[in-house]
Length: 269
DNA sequence: CGGGCTGTTGACTC
DNA sequence: AGAGTCAACAGCCC
View (cartoon, rainbow, N blue to C red):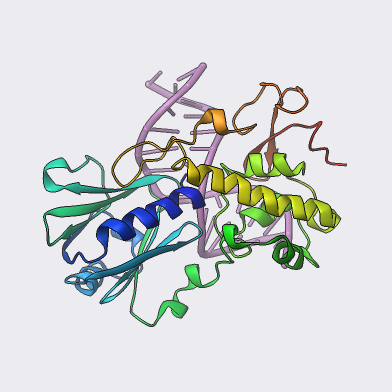
């Protein structure tokens, strides 16, 4: 479940190590992840030189001399920089470079590898509608975005067209730090709560970036991240005492996802 | 060995 | 426009 911290880290690792390399071969084991026919994809990106790697939310933007490679890992997976002698067992795409290294992309099944020609980024629907990066969001922005909206705060925060980058793993602690129940209607939030929420989004995601990303995700070099269960306040800790008030942490259903809350610190009413 | 759960996103319906 | 449900089918836990 890579979210903004992991993808941001992957983008900077990839930028540092991949820029300047040229793609000399592409293997694809699952063409349904592509937005164009397999042949078109391979032809488009073969001989492309990598120019830059950035991210917006959970999407990676690889800029090449022949257009864009857009990657979304979906519900889990890795991007590894390896050599042919050390290929992992599982992979969806392999990009061979001109120096014997290769980039291996793996994900479960809900991942995307899209090709977009240079200058046509606007025409890519999935990334075109993404909201601002969660880390670039100020309290003022958030207040303006929430104003006039309806619906529940958790749906709002998970909606990538509003804010890009927050997923269901980090959201538990973000809402806990803000003392906001996931099912609160956004139009009932006070200015003070929105300010606290903006701060919590920033703090929550930055802490994980500083620690190298979540422990269940791998870096470009196959190492686990340093953000561990010890860094998580209430997420996935059902039954454990709330670190603030001591009440048992609860797991509740919130639409199609689950949420971990302290019902004392995050009252709904 | 099997059932339940999790994570992301788009499509679809009401 | 928002809420609910489903589908894509890997891997872990009990």
